[in-house]
Amino acid sequence: MADGLADAVEAELAELSRRLTEPGQRECLRCFLLRMISEFGCDGTHRWTVRWRDLRAPRASGLVQRLQRRGGCCCDCEVIFNVFPDYPDTDEILPCAGMLRAGSAAPCDLRRLRKSA
Image (cartoon, rainbow, N blue to C red; front, side):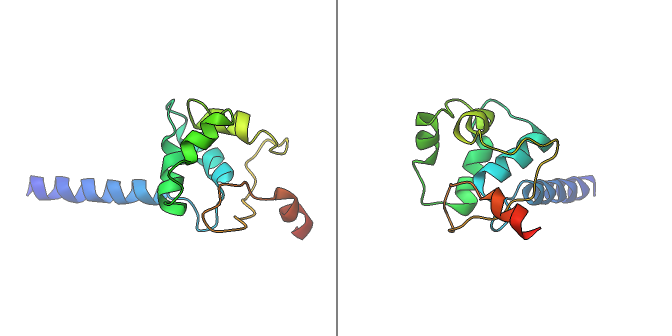
């Protein structure tokens, strides 16, 4: 009985982890990275970039290398600071305005979000 309970708890935790770290259907890479880093931190790797790529742009096999060449050399927070430095100065994370094209790693246009508000 204890093994069955442990397996059920483990499966529940795995499902919860998957749901908490899944990018939104139209969430851009920048907004996903900001959300993941603020909730779970940066572990010094591109784990959140790779998670977003695997779920939202699986054909973009060279994404990490492309981001590294643009300054996101070592980890997800380097991507935020060096590749996407133009985030509005705010104390809170803004809602994502959505990807313009499925699979694109281009950041959303937060100016569009402000105009619609």
